[in-house]
Image: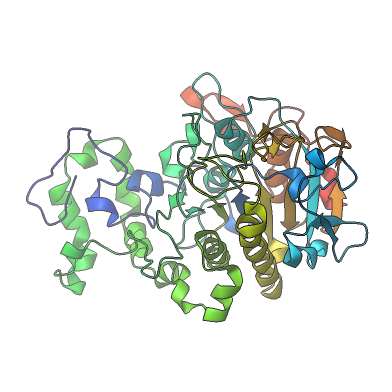
Length: 459
């Protein structure tokens, strides 16, 4: 670890790490390591004026049941249709579960895709990979998250990072595999800024927004001389390849750290209490509110993980027995939590004129088995599920695709994770013929060859 107030650099046995330089993030891009922050402009960023579309990606960790949410089968046998009833929405002919009454009043603002599927293993981790990168990780290659690709190609707007992940990375979901939430082969300089805090906590603050407390004794007028302090303290570091990005962009680091706009984006206490309550006083609700604030402040892409794990926590993962969740949680906890946050987010974005320039994706990593299991729950089922798409150039008030009579398989318009990737990238204004620099400089196509966007979203 290096400290600006130390006479010599101190390095732990594990070498330089993301948060080591400048003592746990004194000069990162709101938490990004310096080697991640510098060079966004130099390494492929494009003209920001040509890219105004943003995205909020809601990762519904655990895998919502299509049959108990947005693709109900009220005429199927009880062991298929489950315990909940459908309700009408404000769009004639579209019905969703009674667990989402506020969503039902906003159906004109979102599309439901009822024919998502993939053919990989029914494992949470692989689903997370495919739904956030468009690809399954194989041969040791980790593909980059959509938001990381956007940051790599278009860079940040102003002082805020291009991609923020809330509230924390996905933790253990049983497979021991990567979850597809970093920059993969693009390199750590394009990883998202991870909040690593619970925005619903009364004492919420962002740990890396300001210099460490031991710097508070330094006079303000000395802060612009930090370059000399860095030269003295980390001369060894600056000879490394990663540190060569420092010379031309050190002043940018200072600007980011001291940016009032960047700090204010995270200050939820500025929101009226009524607004915070409308989103829900829980981790997901406040993360969705924070996502809206970040988009307003210039962040291009915000990923929100609804849950961090599927173990010993009430989630969408309704196997019916511990350490997983009972199906009743859709009525008692998870359903109302999502209904409040998602509906408030769409309403807020719309009222502020942001929905036209902000795509909102809501999806799990797979669906649930059509038949209720002996524990009264449903198990993993990647063969078919439903997802939500709203905002930006996409047309709401429609259902795209259909499942069969038991919600087990797509009946028409099957949609794959690769197609979702193409849809997100096209919505963001990224040319689908783009190639990314892969390992050893080998070009890798942005999306799998032949992957087409979900064209019905634009119709």
